[in-house]
Image 1 (cartoon, helix red, strand yellow):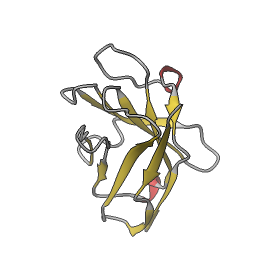
Image 2 (cartoon, helix red, strand yellow):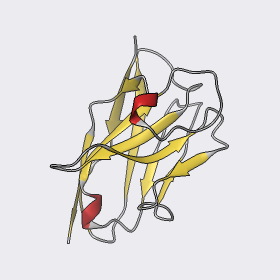
Image 3 (tube, helix red, strand yellow):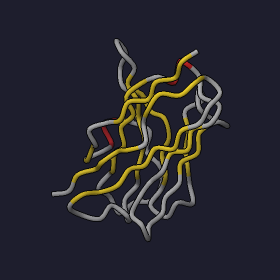
Length: 126
């Protein structure tokens, strides 16, 4: 059974950028649809971005559209999330997830995913 490991979180000023990465440990996730979610203090975990198995299709939450970019590097078996023009309201713990399916498409529901990482903290100061 594999795990997902997030990295790249930290403290950044509003308007700055961060690049999160999600890498597997123990198995390959290069053929699975992947997603990024986040959870702010006192709030429920919410969808951020998702990418299909091939990387040809992506989906974004309206709140991050135009600022965040999800991609995948199947050779390196990683799924980066590039976050630009960060806002204080982007402050949260960010989680990556993988869905165990051979189907194409993207998935925006937490319940669709089978594997989760432990999360990485992103803090945006005003």
